[in-house]
Image 1 (cartoon, rainbow, N blue to C red):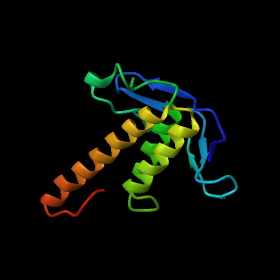
Image 2 (tube, rainbow, N blue to C red):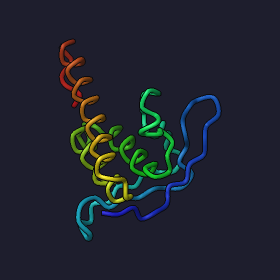
Image 3 (cartoon, rainbow, N blue to C red):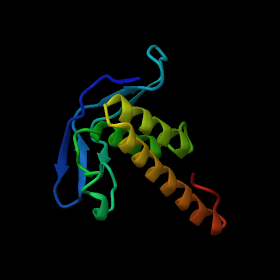
Image 4 (cartoon, helix red, strand yellow):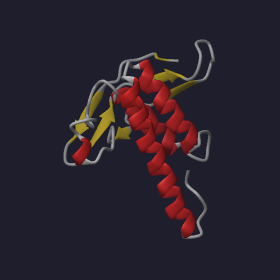
Length: 133
């Protein structure tokens, strides 16, 4: 488990998003797992979607976990193809720890995205469209 490239982003004016200007690769799981995800250049992300109330604890644009946020956004876009939201969230936690994010913060961030996906899945399911978890 490791990022093989540094994250390089450029803000996209007027959108609140950032554009990845170089591909970002991450090897999932143990070293030598041969499961590498590469986020292509040009990918748009909002980094960490954190309510403003919590920005003091988890700044949304922190370089400390920007790579994990980009990876998570990309994996969530793959939902239904290769990675479920549950797997995307677990890889997010793993990437946070690889980047040296303290356990308490990584657990809090993982729990927040997990709860969001569960709540969102419940909302979608109550409309008869199937879960989005």
